[in-house]
Image (cartoon, rainbow, N blue to C red; front, side):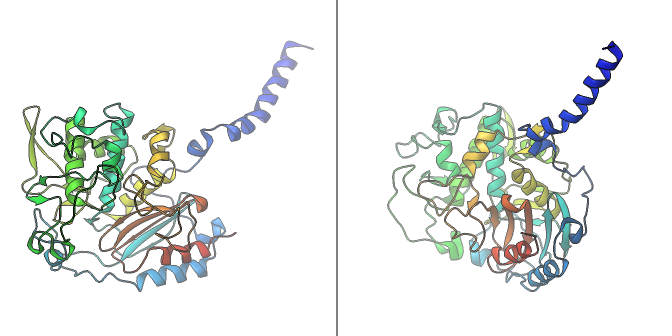
Length: 385
């Protein structure tokens, strides 16, 4: 056999085998998916992807008919949450959303470019920044926070045993005051309708409580190990790589500035309960949700460690089907009627990102009433079985 003929046969074999090898590659799921470039997102007509356009239109109509009960001018903010520590806008958008199926935009409705507070969906963003810190070996989730953070916040006997995982699962039982708000949520003036009766503290790691004061402590602790503001890390390590906009902002409280390495830095919250928080539009929320749908990868780059993502989407021991500041559906209760693999970010108002890996689906729905599963179920009904 001539050298030329052998070369041609080897080349032909390579062409035939290459697609098979790519399909079998563990990276194929990440690199073979569509990832929207910065500034644009490819759209597909629902029928192009096999979806039923009539059912999808019915789902969108349902969502549009379920406007939030929150006041448009945020005049109900202090009644619900208590005295403000930071600013809130003077107006919010009406209900709006985006549906991403198989990586493509198949539906959009409402004012999706409105930059509004996303409330506690920001907690899932704090968890993402923690994932970056794990990736860069700035913390390990089962370390005691006080082993690295030595600003007095973990010196007491109660706080000394708090680990990063406990903060991430809202099981820290951290005791103290952050920016004028105490951990116990006692008092109508400070906490509004969210005020709670006094209770005895439990051992760290043994009890779940949804608690924004402890989230503020967690946010400050992340700043300490990152040695830079959390929003800067979120921008540089997440927002820029996923091609999100520069329209968003992570607003601190008026009094949440601290000294770190001789510099004045803003410590940020995991929500907008007392003002501030992440103000962002639906398109950037969709990219954030899509990053998590793809397991923390964007194109061929792992922005988050796979083990961290897996742990983040695993239920904690004491929470209401809760991972690392992500809501889960392992028990089928948080998202009724949806697969147990569904997970999401939730903020008051309601501002939600719902992710269904089984359906290759991300649904952003902002300023709505009712459980977001009611909308997502209708979207899934339009997907071919």
